[in-house]
Structure formats: C-alpha cells, structure tokens
Image 1 (cartoon, rainbow over the protein chains, first blue to last red):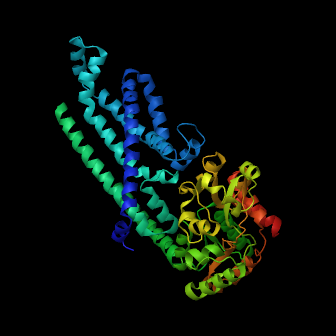
Image 2: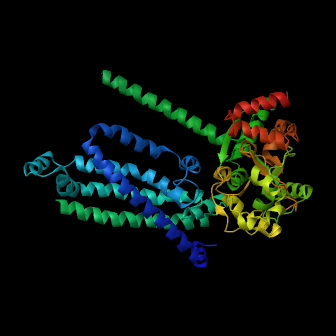
Image 3: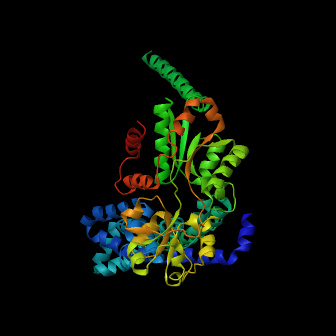
Length: 212
Length: 303
C-alpha cells in the first residue's frame, strides 16, 4: 500500500496523531520556556551557579529516553504512563538550549549599555526588562527554536509510554518492518519540524532586527 | 634534502597503509563466508543469549571463528539478513516464523507448525531449521500476583469478566501481529474499558508492577515475571501457536562446514522453559555478562 493510500484511508487517525504530536511539543516547549528563561536570567545574577546548573542540564540531555521513562513510571504527579510523563521527559530535553541561550543572550549585552542604564538610575528589574531582555531576545529565541525543532523529533518517543503522537506509526512500523507505516509517521514529523524552524526563524530575525 | 627524504618516507608509508586497507577490504568482502560463521540475534536478551550460546558452541566444537552480529532490529531484519547471506544463522521461534514470516493463519498444534516451517523455509529460502532447543517462549498474558489471588484468576478465560474494569498495556508488536491482540480478544471475548495502551514492551513490565496497567502481554521466559512477582495466565483455549526456539541456518553454510550441524545438534532439547527463564533473569535481574553465562552453561551442560 502506498503512503498516499494509507493517508487517504486513515485520515482521521493521522489528524488525531498530528494533533497529539503538536500538543505534546507545544506544551512541553511552553513549560521549558517558563522554567528555563528565569533560570537563565538567575545564572547571569549568580555566576557561581552557572557551571553546576548548565552541567545538570547537559546531563539531562544524555539520559536515554526509555531509561528516563523507567525512572518516571513510579513517580506520583509527574510520572505514570501517558501524556504527562512524555511531557516531563520532553521538558527535561528542551531545558538545555533555552537556559544556555538565555544566559548567553543576556551575558552578551554590551557592558557599556548596561552601565549607561545603571547611570540613568535604572533598578535591576528595569535594566533586565528594558535593556537586557530586548537586546538578548534574538539569542533567546534562537534557543527556543532549537528546543522546538528538536522536540518535534524527540516527541516520537512519547509513543513508547502510551502518549500517542506520530511515533505510534514509527513504533508500529518498526515492530513489523512496514516501511510505509514508518514513513507515515516520519514524514509529517519532518514537515512539522521544518515548519516550526521556519516560523521561529522568522520571529527570531524580526526581533533581532528590532533590537538593532 | 632532509625534507625530500621525509617526503619519500611519507609517500611510502601511505602506499603501505593503502595496501593494508586494500588487503583488509579484500579479506572482509572476499572471505566473509568462507572461513568463519556469522551468527545473528534479535534485539532482546533471550535472543542475544541464545546467539552467544550457539556462537560459543560452534567455536569450541567446530573450531571455526565466529563473528557476532547481535541485537539486530527484530524478526524481519534477521530474516532479510539471513536470506541475503549477511548472517549464516540465528535462533528463531517456530510460531513467529509461521505467522510473521510465512504469513500463515495461527494454529496451535506444535508438530504441524514445526513441520511446515521446516518444509517452507527449505523450499522458499534455502534455510534449514535445526532441532528445537527445548523451551516454548509464548506470549504470556501476565497480571500481578496479588490481583490473581484476590480475583481467583488462573486462566485467560477468567479475565473476560474482569476486563471491562481493567486497563491493558501492550507492546506494538503484540498489537500488530496476526497472532496478537485482535485474535486474542476475539477468542476469549475480552472487552477492556478502553483500547489497550500501546507502549514499549520493556516498559509494560514496570507499568504493571507499579499498578499503572492491570494486564500485559510479556514473553513467558522473561526473567522479569518472577522478579516482579507477576503471574502468567494459562492459555486455556490454545490461542497462541507454539513458539519453540531453534537455530535457522543457511543450507550452503551447513554443506560447507559439516562440523556446524553436529555442534548445533548437541543443543537439541537441552533448555527447558524454567532453565531459559533462569538464564534470562541472570542477564535482566542480576545483570551478569552474557558471554560468561553462555560459557558457564555450556561447561556444565555439554562438557
């Protein structure tokens, strides 16, 4: 059966899985931004935390996903089987690029600009929101972009823990070596990654341009 | 002057290096199947373990060097590899060959399944089935021991009355295969509250032990079943075909190396269900090294 026949016959299921996939990526990236950006900002204020925190985020990246799921299953609230566990794992993997780029974006602001702000009598909060964040936004967005594109690919492992998504076709295809099934999952995931990359790249250029 | 000498030396070394690479390449391609046996295995503990036992048995009995191509991505990868001559043998299960490779409708009669895979493999692929190793690794419909005790569960047919309140978690292969979930549900009239949760097979054991699902389909010889205090329900309507493990080998390899057939023959009927479960547990629960386990087992059982 060709790929197009497959899509024509299972269009409802395909759309459902695409929807699950998008919501897994969107919610995990949103959580990773809410957690990661403040952590990145905190690192510019407390340089001693930089090495241990980035080190920890690095270690998170290296945990194989099935091992991570194994650890998460017994945990209350953030564990079990289903979407919650998958989102927790995706957040863990998305943290590094967001934390690192937030730190780099803010640390890269010209010290002379920061001094000028301070000379004008700005508080630390004003300095952050009116000088550092606007100037560092391009770099921060680049981190979000990397995290999102990687998440689209990584979210296929959600299928290993009963959370659905396009990985379902990939896992089923691998189990019975059906290349059509594998492609049915991999192709939309690839298109989704390209779309996310394009959209966020547009936003990134826009904000980087405005910052200049 | 000095520069010229070094340059010449460098060129000579490059020529020498190139000759070695060429020789190695010739050795790898030309002689791949003449003087050594390539043993494959599928991507789970038991298959790796059996592959290692078979490999060591050939090494010590036939005196041939063995190359190991273990943990290949499942039944179809192994099947394609052996028919293409990339590997010489691997251990396969009769029921899997019968339903998944030959695409027959599942039947539960051990002798007829073995006879037909032997005949069809030889005719269609030029592959020879060795004698079964002795155990049957069937799909194991598995529940927690305390649930089985509380609800008086012994057979899969007992499950039908509980299913509407229970949650099932299955691996993708079990959900997809002809001898998998659909047929099981039809045979036993199982209707679960919600469709079974599709997940990674290895994770289903943990999910069951942690109470996240209530019934899974494991493998009957898995070491995890005893380690996690689980019980296997009896297939009282004989839905599952037999999955007897036996080495499958290329006819050409067998003809070229007479010692290999004799070495494999010695393994026939030597590994019982409980023995296989014990060996798997040594890898999965006690985390011992596969090569050591295989060496110990051969030393004790086939001195």
